[in-house]
Length: 509
Image 1 (cartoon, rainbow, N blue to C red):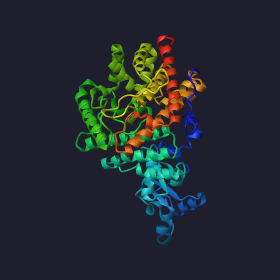
Image 2 (image 1 turned 30 degrees about the vertical axis):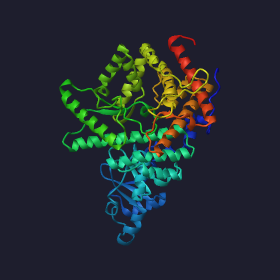
Image 3 (image 1 turned 180 degrees about the vertical axis):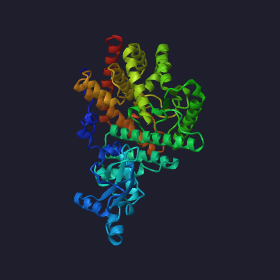
Image 4 (image 1 turned 90 degrees about the horizontal axis):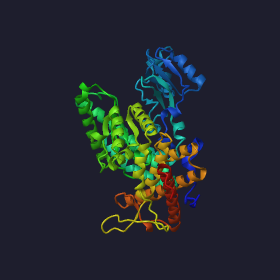
């Protein structure tokens, strides 16, 4: 390759692309696990009519600490534990009773699709060692063991779990939003890679979106507005859709809802106007700044039926104005965070197919990407720009490094029909498709991770000094070695941009 390899100043930067066995060791893995991942399906399940003496005998045979009890419809109705044996049975029963007479009927349970860390926090607060896991119909599937679930997390991460799982009320979610920056700082000091911290920040933010959306539907229903009139999905875009949040990302959100008869327009439209206003208001109150570009569900441009979304993307590229191509640039990285996931999958499939059929779409997107200049001069000098009145110049690391790389990788991924939105996943898949060599994977992964680390570190410094987190890093804030690494990273990105230009225009530089 023409440029020198981008070398990491921290531990190996290939962790984002390593197999699942390596990912298992991640300190933040627990935040993306579901209850279903740790479900024990060999639990004892008995009907309410089962004989008490027989139940205790089966518990002894299986060395089981508890039994789940179901009613005639096979729904969870109670639990019987070792404590119940000593507290309720030993002194008051002769063994001829049914299990229904001695079981604990107030049962706390988890759904198989719940996030593991939420359930861990709940079990810790309740003081439970086990918790039944049920499906959507409240039928028991098995048990979650607290010790097994917590084994995947480092001891200090358990403290983060408690902090990141406050009650789903406004004040609780405000605390979650505030504490995630403290957690990010501690994880960075523990030498966790920046992409893993970004993934955690994004996960927590998107989880807040989900909880706020659920709160909003409940608020509307309680006020007499009824349930959502049609299936819908809340989507996030930009860095949230890629799983690459920095500190305090603004709101880039939208809503997809299913098609409906024209005579229901007022009903559906009025509901989702109210929904989007409450959604954005609550998110702002929690700590998500409003989007300066008005890329929010309150804007009708970002609140449409599935058919309208498909038509809009077509119009964007038929007109091919810079503004409208930029809108699609934001939109192509969307992810579904709440509601009916199938709507998001349908729209994603449409976009991927659309791009394959209309190569002019990528040509238009390339023109937008071509306007993003890498922050490196011809003679290898790091470019800086003014950051504000009376403030020193600094490197725009987001617009001069990270986004040019993200955009170039996105174009190549869309050209190959890849549906992934994460930049790291796109790089991995492009490698599998034979588009990127091993060296290129190392170059681009290391470049993105190094720049992400520098910018995240700077934003956390700003946060500690009660400053607004920005996209700038001053030269004085990075070491001589880091400057060398940054220059190599930017050279790799400039080389990638030249390659993309050749592929999309035929020009050879």
